[in-house]
Image (tube, rainbow, N blue to C red; front, side, top):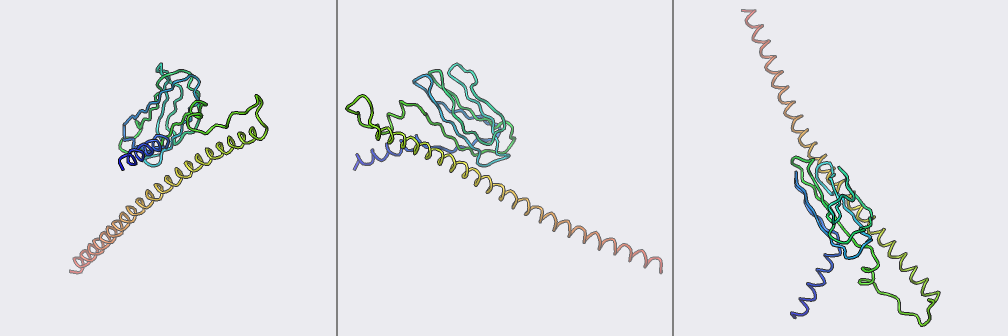
Length: 214
């Protein structure tokens, strides 16, 4: 029983490590995350999207182990790209919400390594061929598997995109409902105030006419 629990925990930790995660970036806050590359020229896939809060934008910057800025931009709603980590060491991914005075942001964030070493660790490899030249159908199978992997990756990114759009649309609808609610209250108060003002003016005219008759 204990062994099954340990296996379940390890499987869960592997799932979390390989999945995107969501965090809250408070107003005037800066949040950084770090990855360590063990080999030069490592391909790193990087994705983020602001799900809610303010104008749905954040500032971000990526620094290499020497502290030099590799990529940076301001007031971006989302980013999806791949860059080459040429140096071995720790890379810093930072998000900043300095433009907001009170609005916090909810951000989806994902980093993936895209190099051959990691692929061999986590993907099944084809069996060794008896001849030096691979068989044609094995090459065809490898090509098909790579195409399927690319399609699945594209599908995952598309799902991220629609998830982001859905979240932003929900936030827009909620914001519109709130504005309509407060505008309705303001309209009712304005109508009550106008009615009270009209009654006061009419009473003033009637009092003035009575004094003139007397």
